Every structure is written in structure tokens, then in C-alpha cells.
Length: 220
Image (cartoon, rainbow, N blue to C red; front, side):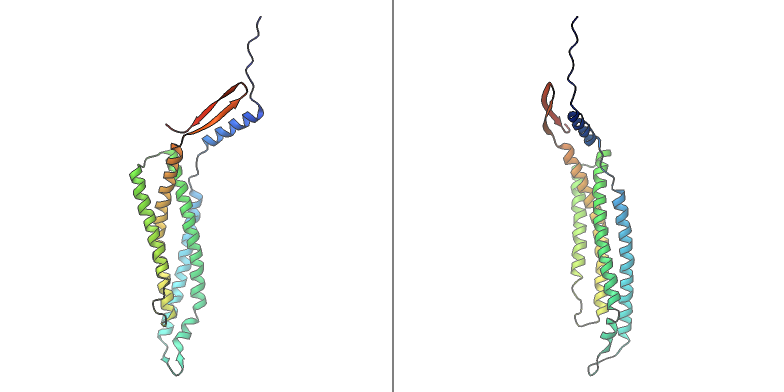
């Protein structure tokens, strides 16, 4: 009686490699909900602190406008306005840091959401993605440009409260443009990255005891 041939038993390392490959293939991208939630919270905190900065800007302007400016005694309204400089600059600086964190978190979350939606239900066409990329990053660039343009003092020798108010309002306008821009642009970017990764075809050698060949991965 002839015994049936014994099939080669994969080694422990081969089993680990195959298990890791299957896990990598079945792993789905995150939907970005956590990053988006953090971004929304930071955006709200940035808006609140910027509103406090604007409040002190207006107080400084009102206080200074009620003072007289005599050349022999110096511009007393200028000194009055600078009494609120710490509050104006402090809240503005904190709001700027929170705003940068909000944009970064929203961008990361939107990119992750784009990849997740492509993996679950791809619907957007290439022209639609291109339009969203152009519009989104265009709005983001306009918002950043607005922020830096309003850093220029409108009146070097004027009331410092007026200059601070112009900067704070410019920051608000920039955030209103940059926030939807980075959401749309990052979402479309993540969607396109998902398309590219799915379209890639990779060849890798596959070897096992009693077997040698080529493994092909990708979409066709």
C-alpha cells in the first residue's frame, strides 16, 4: 500500500507573514471623526478667545477717543490705549494658536474621511475631484493671504486699538475662508490618494516550502 504524499507544512514564519498580509489587506482607513471633533472644539475655542480680543480692542478705541491729545503733554490717548495691550495681544495670540491647531486637525480629519469614503463607497469622478481640489485649496490660500495682509498696520501713528481690531477682523475673515477650504481640499486629496493606492499593481515574490512564484496585488 502506497502512502499518500505529504503536503508541505508552512513554517511558523510563513504563517505569520501570511496572517500579516491578510490583516493589512482587510484593514480599512479610519473615518477621521476624532480628528474632526478635535478640530471643531479648537475652532470654537479660537472664536471665543478672538471675540475677547475684539472686545478689548473696542474698549481701547473708546477709551482713547475720549482723551485729549496735547502736543505739549504728549498724546495721552495713546497711553490709555496701551493699558489694554496685554489683553489685546494675549487673547489674539492664544486665538491664533488655537486656530492653527483647528485647521491642522480639520485637515487631517477631512483627509482621513476622504480615504474612508472612497474605500466604502467610491462615487466621485476624476473631474469632480479636480474641481474640489481647486476650489478647496483656492479658498484656503485666500484665507491665509487675508490673514497676512491684515498684519500690515493701517495707521502706524494712530490708535493701537484700531490696528489690533483690523488684525483681529482679518483673522476672522481668513478663518472663514480657510476652514471650508481645508475641509474641501483635504477631503478631495484623501479621496484621490485612495484612488491611487487602489489603482496600484504590485508584484512580489512568493516562496514557501515546495513552492515558488510571483504574487500580484492591486485592482484591475
